[in-house]
Amino acid sequence: MKKYSFWAILLIVVLSFVLRFYKVTEDPPSLNWDETSIGFNAYSILKTGKDEWNKPFPIHFKAYGEYKLPLQIYLSIPGIYVFGLNELGVRITPVVYGTLTVLLLFFLAKELFDSEVAAMVSAFLLGVSPWHIHLTRASFESSLATFWIVLGMWFLVKGFKKEKWFVFSMIPFALSMFTYNSARIFAPMFLFTTLIIYRKKLIESKKIILISLIVFTILLIPLAPFLLSGERSARYKLVSITDDPGLIPRINENRGNSHLPQPLPHLVHNKVTYVAFYFVRNYLAHFTPEFLFISGAPHKQHHLQNMGELYLLQAPFLLAGLFALFYLRNRFKGLLFAWLLLAFVPVAVTQDSIPHALRTLIAAPFYQLVCGLGFVFISRWFRGKAFIKVLSSFTLFSMIIISITYYLYNYYVIYPIAYSRDWQYGYKQVVNYIALHKAEYDEIVFTRHYGEPHMFTLFYLNYDPARYQNDPSLVRFETNNWVWVLRFDKFYFPDLGDKGTQFVDIVKASPSKKLLFIGRKGDLPQDLPRLLSINFLNGENAFDIVAVNNSLSKQKP
Image (cartoon, rainbow, N blue to C red; front, side, top):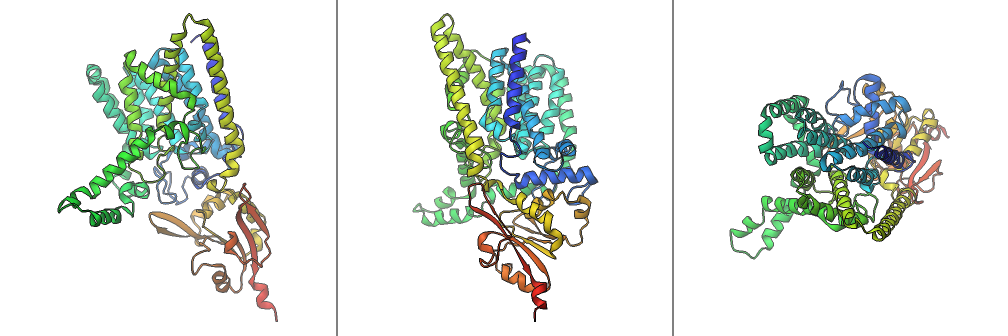
């Protein structure tokens, strides 16, 4: 590596770290329920060697009933050990591996294109990528999967020069399958496709390829019991297009409205044709200009709204890079296109928030790589044209500054205020109040309307995991493949809007208790004084806290 390249990549890595670390405890504006779950289970393993369900060192964490894959949780333990069970303790882990992914992409691009300039541009684009920054400032498993996939790609490409690297590449590819469900589908499909595309080359190394496959298989042995159990489908049932409750009614309705002669309505309108239609629609939605350059993904936790997953200025370089892959006859174009085309297969079988930035993050490095190649390809046109080269460089530099500034302003200034509700803002403030006043009440009633109040309570109280694991008052129930905690300790988590669990019902059922209620504005009587009101950052009401002293009212004459 040339000296200037060393300093350039060092600056890119430092910039990448700063963009991921700056105000990481404040933006996103709150931990979401998955982050608190990851954090508390890591804390529980650290303190007791068991998860929240009292299972020692599990390979799959039952969590809310969706069975989280283990690697994100285990790798969060060092951060929590150093910084404590708090926002920084949870989010420092994705900041670190997110930054390292940028560095790995530099090495991967250098192997792919044999160009340090293409490598630096690729790394820079990932370092400032709205897609990647957003999902490495919070604890999302997909960003960890992306880290392992990029590392595996680098080792795999090195294997075409030195065969031993084929074996080493199996380790990160296997580890990716312990991070995120999309990677469990992508990794084996990608490796199989690579075997097919490069079979002539790989058959010359059949001994090392056989060893590589054996290593990959051995590393996946811990997954076998889970894959053979009913737990395997828990997460899939929550998101699959085949489990959409409206699918069969829509099929029946369209059959009934069809004017085709029998049996054509059954042949045209059936589960196979509809699933195929939704699969293709979902898949293609991720290749549109809207997703890539204009509006991005609709899920507000996963992407800054009203801008694409890529900067608009990347469009010409992306097109140029795609052309260059064929024009320059790059030997790895098959590998790169397999990466792109297979990355969107897992999300195509899901039904919510399409297009989806989180489940497709493993595709993000591909776009930066191709743009890096496109930059080098375009720059060759300006050789010997000094004035045009200077003018185009100035224009490009200005566009980069404007694009990044626009993104950062929207992310740091507008996003946390506009979307704090989507990040479950307010739970920390509620639990901080509870921590100060818990001893004053016999029971604390905390609405579950926004989802998972028990986990936020455990997390922000730094609740003793051993005490929770063995709490005799712990009550859970399952509905729609999701587990809810109804009670533990002196906490009660009803949906205060439901019949039978409304404010009046709970007060009547607890005639001798001093109660603390946490609910939404409409859940609680307007005439009761608010001990504390908590608003989302846009000023809308999130929680109200009121007290009812039934024990005193009973003593009145």
